[in-house]
Image (cartoon, rainbow, N blue to C red; front, side):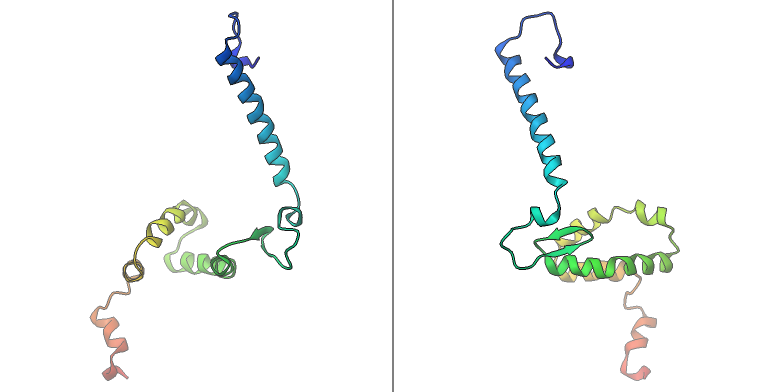
Length: 136
């Protein structure tokens, strides 16, 4: 009997089922932790000819996105920190996951407009003059 269930009353069928469920959940959790500790070669499909591994993780979907992130995340972070004079604490305090999830559901034109707004790239007279034919 678990300590949170300890009582002087006799064990009812409901409490016995709950106790069995607790034991099964504990066993399952322990097995899952052991499975995660296995090497990536044991986790990936044994008949596969090749696998993509980035920073110790096997990548099985969204390959293009994951490769792009692996190649650019560090440089993008450095660029944004330099541009906006952010330290690591400021950068890490931004909920980038929520920003990503909210933007990926929007049409491309919307995300482009938001990016231009955030980075102050609106077509002001100064910006338009930079790209106009007469300015060259």
